[in-house]
Length: 88
Image 1 (cartoon, rainbow, N blue to C red):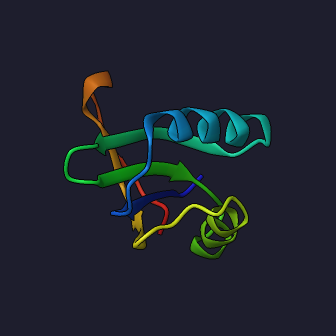
Image 2 (cartoon, rainbow, N blue to C red):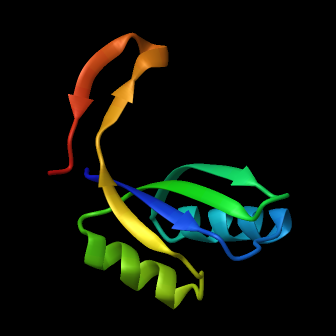
């Protein structure tokens, strides 16, 4: 499944992130990780989706503001898996 990194710069509370992650999982969406800098309001979320358009649709449905969506490749270093998984 292709991966997308979504960037956010509008304040998001930790509680909102937890509730949203649960709702997304229950709805069958895959958000692997969310990287948060609460102090500077910088957030990066790693998603799996069929397309960038699907990601936009999901985020808009959930009323989650975002700056941009980037297709990314994943290198799983912790698993000693240096093959690159590409959504492209």
